[in-house]
Length: 310
Image (cartoon, helix red, strand yellow):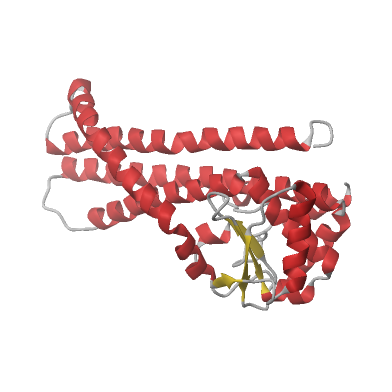
C-alpha cells in the first residue's frame, strides 16, 4: 500500500467492487435464460434458441421490476432490520461522552460528517459500521469494547469503522447483501419445489433437477462474490484507521483483544456478521483455500502482522 498509495487502493477496491456488483443482475438475468431453457425442455422436446430468447425478452423486464421492488423495500427497511438483528440502540453524548468525544475528534480532524453512534449491550468485543448515505451512516460498538479497551485502542477501532464509511464500502456491501438475499430466496423456493412429489416422467424430472441445481449454483456464485467484497474491505479499513490515528500498534492491540472474545449473542445471520470488525459468531478456522474463498473476514493474525510491520 505504501508504494501505490492508500487512496489509490481504495479507488481500485471500489472499482473492483462495483464491477462485482454489476455481475449480480447479469447473473440473475442469465439464470432466467437457463431456467426458461430447461422449463421448455420439461414441457416437451428441446426448445429452439428463438423460443427461449422470445420468452426471456418478455419475462426479463418483469423480473427486473420485481428485483427493483425487492431492492427498494430492502433499501428503505434495512436500518430497522439491522438494529433488530444486532440489538443495537442509539448512543448519545451524555450516555458515553468518552466514546462520543473520540469519534467526534476523528471526524473533526478530517472534516467528516459525524455518523450516529449505537451501542450493543454485550460484554464481548466487536463493532460495525452501516449506512447507505450520510443521513443513515452509523457506527455500533459493543459494551465490552467500550469497557475493555483503553482510549488509543478504542479510538483505533472507531477509526477503522469510520474508514469503512469514508471508503464507501459499507454501501457496496449492503447492496451485495441485498442481491445475495434474492438468490437465497430463489434457492429456497427451488428446494421446496424440487422436493415435492411429482408424476412427471423421467425426462421432466431431469430437467427440473437441472433447474434446481443451476439456481443453487447461481446462489453459490453470488455468495462467493459477496465474500470477495467483504474480505478486502477489512485490510483497507485497517489502513484507513492508521492513516487517521497514526497509531498502528493501538489497532493491533485492539484486534488481539477482540479476537479473544468477538462473540455477539444477538447476531444469528451471516450477512449481518460480515459487517463486524471481526466475525461475531464463530472461531476463525485454520486458513486454507476453501476457508479463504468462503470466509467473510481475512484471518485476524494476518491483519495484525500487517499492522506490526507498518
